[in-house]
Image (cartoon, rainbow, N blue to C red; front, side, top):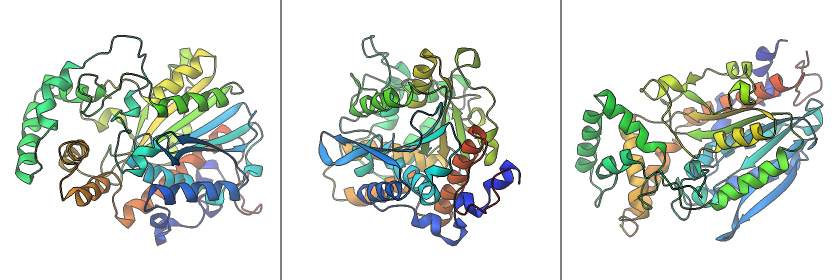
Length: 392
């Protein structure tokens, strides 16, 4: 059986997820997701480490390691950098663990699952941490004078609102659409998401110091990188792309600086290149991104690295626009609004749709992607029965 054919075999994916099992992998709360992840990791003999959050001992970033920690090839799958999106990433990690057995990983390879890098935001169904820091914009040199991001300041009136009404949302969205009709306007709208330091109560706030989540990430890197020769890091997200679409964003170092080069495992599932997903002919100029930081740290010590964000698309642009405004408004102007809990659920549904078909899609394709990475990193990978036929 060839490798890509083997990716669809029941022994790799577990049972078919078209029967609703994918939906069942999605937890209803952070606590449920954490319990399932830790239980599945223990069942397959993974080594577990926890990094408790200082704000609440019940919140933690948990790390499960399968295979030889000294293996030269590392595959790391992270979830929950943008808290609420962790419901999908956790479901993929838990589904893969359900059928994984560390004893059958190829020699010289190990798998590390980093669960809920931003557990506070995961538990509160929001994007940013307890200080409103966007962890995926925080990994910058805070000793340098921050870039205030003039594009964000120019568009802040479209994303910050005092009240929450349907008609006001539509007016703001149409104003943004009108701006995007010109090339300069489209560039400005994309650049505003790069990260900003001028509005601590705003979207994409990069913070004024390393966040707790960033410090945990660096601790994980200290544990993973020294033994590594090759690193594949996949950071799972939701929200970019259409419903049922997967978008990959490559933050790997250039090949000359330590990038891995060819990545045939990406062909394991249908993926849209990021250049066409954002409508600006490229990727917005994000700063402080986890995957890029990982790649740079790896390259600094001579580790070849392939570092990706993998996005599972969810809703249309207008719904996503409302969701991003809503998350910010609920944290500030709307925190005491009587509609708060209902609106928080509405926000969560934009990033983690309740649709069973979407959830089955995420689990099925997410597990196939991980299996593909393992196949390409090692000579063989088997889960389930030894007679599965997946070994070439």
